[in-house]
Amino acid sequence: MTVGTKSETAPRLVSDRSLVALAVLNFFLADARDGLGPFLDAFLATNGWSPLTLGFIATVGGLIGLIATPVCGALVDSSTWKRTLVAIPVFLVTAAALITLLVPNVAVVWAGQIGTAVVGAVIGPALAGLTLGLVGQKLFSRQIARNEFWNHGGNFASLFAVFVIVSTFGQLGVIWLMIATAIGALIAVFAIDPTRIDHNVARGLAVDDGEPGPSGFQVLYKTKGLILLAGIMLIFHWGNAPMSRLIAQQFSIELGTPFRTTAIITGVAQFSMIFVAAATPFLIRRLGLSAVFVIALLALPLRGFLAGSFSDFWVVYPVQFLDGIGAGLLGILTPVAVERLLEGTGRFNIGFAAVMTVQGVGASFSNVVAGWLVGIGGYGLSHYVGGGVAFIALGVFMMFRNEIVRPAADSGGNPTRLANGEPR
Image (cartoon, rainbow, N blue to C red; front, side):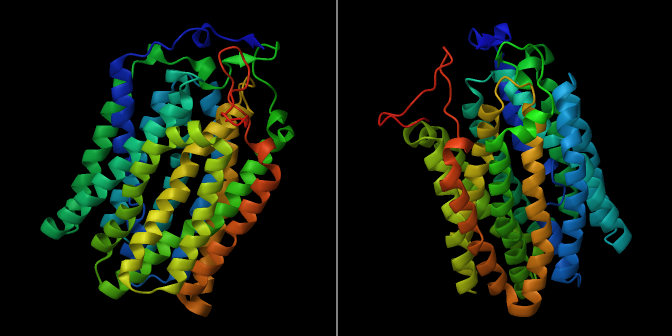
């Protein structure tokens, strides 16, 4: 393989300021990228909205976001304005969430969710590309884990703040919290030194196979491992995505405290994801990427069984802890696997966006199905079905894991291996 840029032949030179700013950005993005996020369902459920209606809103918003995601990935690949591609969605998502919170009528809720889905679709690819361009290929998996560590830490801090602020000042305090986190994210993104971002590396052109420039878009559907990975993510998120929403709905209605209840439920998952993010680089080095994928995929069946079998509030702690293991690990493993699969093509960001699109199809359509299952058999039935489909994802991965997970290359372009000879 020939070297595509000088930046991968020597250690990446990134200022401390840029890495600190990237950490702060991920911390504040936890709240600023999703608007009301998990609180929306609980807030609307306590205002009389049915699970089926909430499922339709999530599905329609998700599908519209899916249409925008591949376009956003291509935009990130070709753009040298990656900081701006993070900043604009932060501003618009926060504005939409504030309007929804202040005027929660049907028109505002629908418009806010659709708008949030469209502009929010660019943040994931933009942040991944920004990270890869800053630290380079060799340090990418480690930095993605650090990003997730700070992101989940920010989520946990935000949820704790919501719990305290709502208890002390009422719902109005959430508005000021959202404004503060948006401002923090905007300051952090523009504190990143733009001269430290290698835009060729950011799109996956650190190395090539002797053909300079980005590959054609056909590389996306000709890379079998990428298609299989996307399918596995679709199945996993089909089962996993509605579960936290439905748990929050169920206990918010029972307890009558939507913001505080959702803060506890979501906070448990985010707290566990902090430790998952810190441990993932070590797990990848010791066990290999493939084994860590198996651990992540096994978490969902157990999660669905526990959530469906017990209806006391204590069950949210093990159930959400397992969410931290499953979804938390996959949030790190997926971009790392995509980067390895598309190394040298120059199509990393659109490839990652394509996987996000396919997994979003599963997450979006599952909301309607989950709402329907709740209607005919209660929350437990929905949890059982969601956990059960994860076995399909696990089976597909076990059959094709060698095509999905490619070994990482050392500085000479050779695959690195574990002590037992297995690729990392």
